[in-house]
Image (cartoon, rainbow, N blue to C red; front, side, top):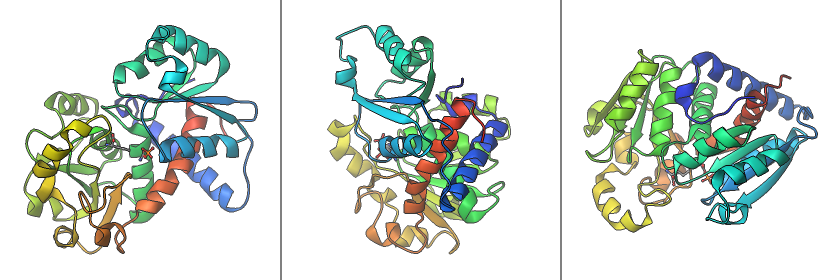
Length: 306
Ligand code: CP
Ligand code: NVA
């Protein structure tokens, strides 16, 4: 049994193993083949924040693999103070084989790993979004082929998505540029941990659009105000105003450059309709791949082969 908490805990070989499983299952589904490898298995999903893609993609993945899925919001689970967190984790672990969590605090996911006794998957915390970043690199490989030596530019807030994407890109040999205002970039402490874990990582941060977009294979953005930061929304709109991904910005990158967004998007803020609905956008392929990646990940954490 394994966990997916931070991508810093993964080796490139682990990433390749997850991608291999996801690719095989995606190909087999296309042929109408749904191997029931997780028949009798139970996944519990415990979410403190809303979700469309993460919740549904894991539900669908589990069901297509023959398993079952149970959803609880954090209050129903008793995480609002009804019981001690280790007790909740242990009880849920007693009924399930794998737990997917979406939390504010990263510490809650760490506690489930310590106390639940089953495989735990980080379905987003304030710090990280590893399932998304794995899906993103999987999608990039599908669309642009070999990603090694290519550049991914993340425009906007150096948030949870940027954090995990920086690691996933580095594990796959991609260079990663955060194009962001000072004060909203990836933390130095995180960059040091990444450099230690992955000495070949090429990660830089800038507010120079021209140099960032030059030779970009992928331009990626996410919301300026993440879940939990709603009180800062107005201030953030001012800070990030000039970081909108629009046609003018995309013109600074090669024509072959693709646009990605983890979704949900705030159209008209971090991205315009022209870009997200335009020919360079691969956001819906990316969203759909969440399910294929979830399947690969479920088999990987449960150490199942196909
Ligand atoms: N990208 C993503 O995680 O979407 P949801 O918040 O809808 O799960
Ligand atoms: N950064 C966003 C990602 C949503 C999938 C958030 O945390 O709200």
